Image 1 (cartoon, rainbow, N blue to C red):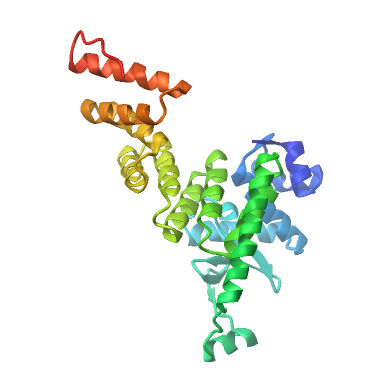
Image 2 (cartoon, one colour):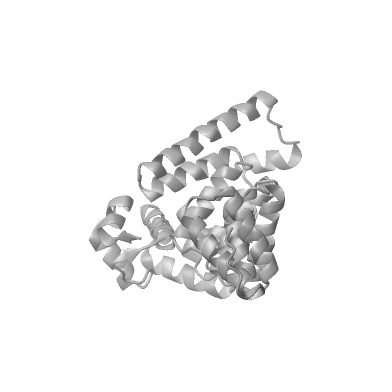
Length: 295
């Protein structure tokens, strides 16, 4: 979470500007902000810099909520921008005018050329260069996270890595985790799913997505994705721990015992191991009353 002062510093806007957006009902008043609010404020700031009047922004948002009923908050879930004095939005690869809901076709010279010609394919050398550049941006995102850098810069670094290499699963997972920690679960889920699509063998992506579903109370989906992570990486200690908890919550004692034992073989000495031993002892006592064995 960020304080109001933090948000003003991150976005380089004045408190008067923020108060005006609140008075216009573009964003609710608050003293604490998470990632969804950061995205919304960045969008409003971009539209302000593009000289879009507040009343036009308000009208565009109202129209989008009617046209796109499945979108909870257009400011956080859509790319909204100004073009030629009109507010437009990119959705599912298409461009739409916000007020009318009319899809727009791009008949620019570059787009016409693309339509009549085969697109140039990057050479292997160019692809390697882009992957190398993506890795540099990914590492920058990691360094910023470890040093406690601004959230905006961390997100931008990972987004740049994904722009250069759409299959940068690590950057996609880290973006998902940033939004997950910011309680923006819908956005986090989208990033985790993109990471899995980019690399179906990436166990961490399945594990993090399972954590998200577990947080939402969708235990069956969580268990499914934990088990995929374990198939891909059988020695994934944290996955065994979480699966044991889920089976224990479902009163599937034998499976819970099996995963507690697997976890303790992989992590016998941490603080979490003492919890695992306690739960394992309790479950064994339920199955074998009077049993005093410990793992």
